[in-house]
Image (cartoon, rainbow, N blue to C red):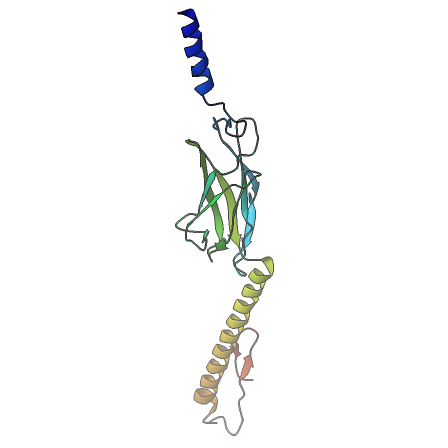
Length: 197
């Protein structure tokens, strides 16, 4: 009887599968999301270029987690942009636990915005926000201001010229001053018309 018990026990132990060291990977208990690049980046809306957002997914021991699903989501209104796939970009972390949001094109709206990032694996989820902003480069702002100034001066000069011609034709065109020719002074710099001398 005892011998039969030991033979059954031995048969059960031999039939049980032996875990392989490769398949003995423990499930992730907690995920951490670290922003590697992109925080505080300023995107050039004139050239429609942006810095790539890069995150690293780590476990509770700060070791990289490969194969985690990562979703980058842009705001649907205001400053922001789009990926080739639209407002969201989905990827999987590499062997170093990194995920890169490729193909971000900023829209033409200046201002700050956030990219919402969600990472998940083995039923665990974590998220973070990456703050960025869209702006025109300094030279583009100065160039736009100088173009506006030139347009304003041209309009003012044209207004002054038109006003001077009207004055000359109504007041000086008839030459009723006893043979004295009156002249009109037009100043293009300020757009004013001076009195006859």
